[in-house]
Length: 467
Image 1 (tube, rainbow, N blue to C red):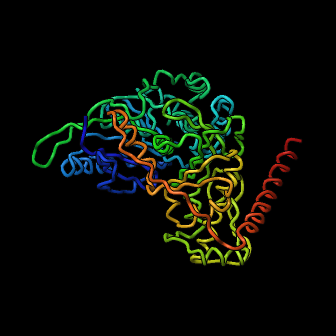
Image 2 (cartoon, rainbow, N blue to C red):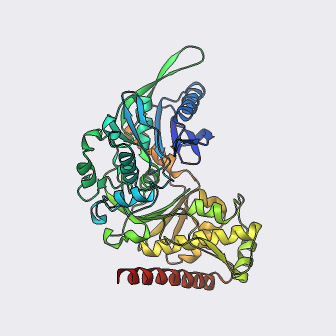
Image 3 (cartoon, rainbow, N blue to C red):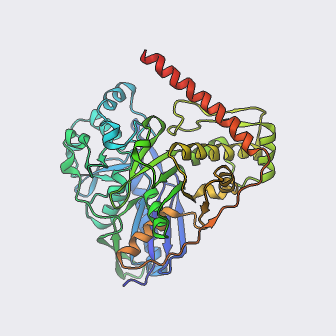
């Protein structure tokens, strides 16, 4: 049984990290980088060569310094790779780019029905099957050249192990490529003839190969490569491994992804960015999400410090509001984010942004029917008041926060530990104390009234168009 640390590459679109997790379940070292997305012809693509070099260098350092003997990848959604032989057939696309309108109208008509894939129709490459169709329109012979269509974590797993595999939590993440209730590929995959390019499945966390690391002194050693996982699903796995069963997970980063393990799929509304994710064990889970981390960065003007209760109380008293949405997707699509009420700047602007993200989370919890315990994980916990404000707004639910802001990385590590028969993690979540901020309830009612009016106008407009 391995007693050596695990290397977990937690791959975000904007920020990617390496965590060295000890056999006792503690982070003992880490490194960070920003993947480079460069312009290539008329597309924005990943500089995979530079990224791979960073990973190799950091893995070698981890082996030399800590004796790491296992590795795994946790990866952000919406991204895929086409590979043949030992190379990419096409550079990896940035999912935040929209196909030309004339192509979009054609490929969007090809998407399977929502009740088959539980993938809502999303812009850009948020359904990565949409970007596959885009590449197919650009070059009808391109995908046929690929030996395999790999999800993002499985691309890096292949780079380090030379083995092609698939993994269900990533395929099942609003890709349009998976039918959760059939536990099989969607009709789109069959219709496009892609089934043969989907490699065999391996469970997330299972050992699929080894990577040889050559050290500076000339010695070489092998590192076991475990199959990678979708990041938010890894976070869900981590908290389940701690003993949470009937709960709602709010996984925060660039996206706020909300899983409600108790919600029936019938509650899902495709028009409000609600979907079914699929766990590492093939089980669909009702989900709603919005780009909360990105929206906070935009709406706050890049504020990077905790927000004080005094600033929050001030903007509530002023009745300064932020209204959706400051990024694409989410439960209020088709609206451009804006501030209303007195002008704010600096920390007050950040306070309005924090309240906005908390209120959007609160709205999303209502839409997904959340009445059970809540666990909040990830970067938004660092804003300081996000969890206490949410605990006030959800007074009928117990809100837990994790002292560990890296649930996706720890979930990936938990999958590795499970594969070798260990579970060193303990539940260190704490109950968030509700914030005592005067006027918050009334502020929420006013904000929700404005948002409901926006939604009513949108639905009325759609009804007129149908008529």
